[in-house]
Structures are given as structure tokens and as C-alpha cells.
Length: 330
Image 1: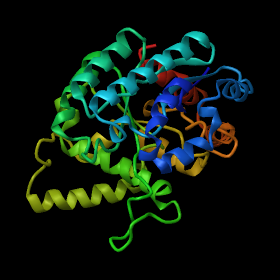
Image 2: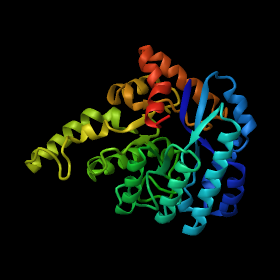
Image 3: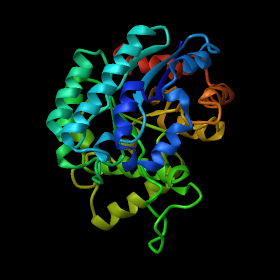
Image 4: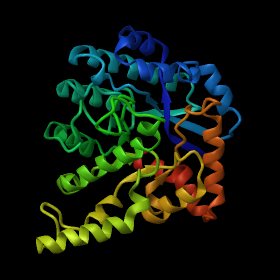
């Protein structure tokens, strides 16, 4: 079995409810409208039928509801999305293994309530958050109750990058050109989010916390030695063995993240991620349906990359299936 742990959907009822506010996310709407498989379940299944033993973990695609509507509306939208994903799982259990909860993160009481409902009533195996929450970092105090709950539930938190085209790359401009915001900005924002979590001591405060990053840990594997050298310099300047609130070198906390294989193939990059995080921290994920074949390219190329980097059969079994089963308590 291959368990694809990071795939995206926009179920029909949820899409209809969300698109009432489409004028508030015009850029994201243009992107989603080009990917009919987000909503067309039959077309999605036809793509998956080419892969024996392929199952998916469902997550709702962008935009984050908290950036579109107010707290009460966000809570209702999240509930609609989660109920629809639960229906998809019940109807097609041979293809949809489970889902992760969509949450109204501008309403923490509703977020905690919806998380518990999604896990305990709908059978979901985690939650999705973005690299920013209404412009705030993932180390914000308001998120601590959610981290405590997920630690208690012993289930992971998926981190999806979030940077918009209207975030310029230079202070003298008003937009990001040449898709810099997503191609390069998303791995950067993932790296920023990971770093803020590390230095906020989240792994110390919540020893059982589990985060899954999209796109194989952002920039971390590829700059690991640079990270060590510069943080060693920082510790030397401070005259300390560890940074405040930490009991290990930052590099050791970065290795504690779990990560998907969604690199659009790219065996050399995947090998770098594997060498840094190790076989127990990588999980098969494709980012379906974000390519010109509605996910078919990403599936093919991700499988090919895993096969091309000369891993042992036991390592491949962990990446394709075993790590997900362990992490999601399947």
C-alpha cells in the first residue's frame, strides 16, 4: 500500500459555501478553478485507479478559512468541509483512508471543539494549520491549547505553507513576480515556521507533539551545515551551551519534524531530505492535484524519485506506508 498523506480537495458543498466570499481570495480562486479534480471526485478516482494500493489522506485546500471570513462563519465553513470529507471516506474507503481537520483558527474555542469532533466522531487522524495564522507565527501563545490537545490526542499537525502573490519580494513593489511567492516563498515560510517552533521550545513544552511539513522540510535539509555553523557562532557569542529554553542544539529539534516527499520528483532533493531526517521521518506525499495533469504527474514523479534513490526495501516500506500507520495510529 502507498499512503499519500498530503493530498488536497475542495468538496462540492464546501466550495459552494466558500465561494460566496470569492471576492476575498481572487488569486487562490483562479488557481483552484484550474484544478477540477479538487471537486470532481469521479475524475480523481480515475487517476488513482492507475495505481494499485494507492490510498489518500484528504485535506482541504487553500485558502485558510480564518483569512476569508469572521470567527462564526469560519467555524461553520470548517464543519461543512470536515463533514464532506467524512462522507467521501465512508463512500470510498478503498481510496480514502482518512482526513485531517479543517479548522477556524480565528476562533480558538471553536477550533478545539471541531478538532475533538473531527477526531472522536469523524475518525480523522490529525489537523491542518498554515505557516501563519492571521499573520501571526506558529509560536503564538494562542495556539498553545491546540498543541496541548494534539499532544493529548497523540496525532500529528500538518503544516501547509502560506504566502500570497500580493506579498512583494522587494519593499518598493506591491506584488510578487514570476511565482517567486510560491516556488521559493513557500519553502522559505515553512522553514521560518519550523524555526519559530524550535526556538519557542514547543518540543520541550509538548514532548509528544508531532508536526508534518509539506515539501520535505522546506529549506532545512539543504542548509543543515550552514544552520549548525551559524547557531554555533550564536552560542559562542552568548557563552552558552544551549539557547534559552532549549536543552539541545537547534539541529536536533529540526530533525524531530516529520516530512512528506512532495518535491514533484527531484531525486537529489529527496535524497538530501532522507539523509537529514532519516527513514523514520519521511512519509509518502504527492500534493495532488497541483500539476497540469491534475496530480498524475506528481504521483508518477514522486514514486519514481523514491525508487531512484536506491533505498532498501524496508526503508521504502516505511516511507510508503509504515511511518504513516505508526504516526496516525492506524
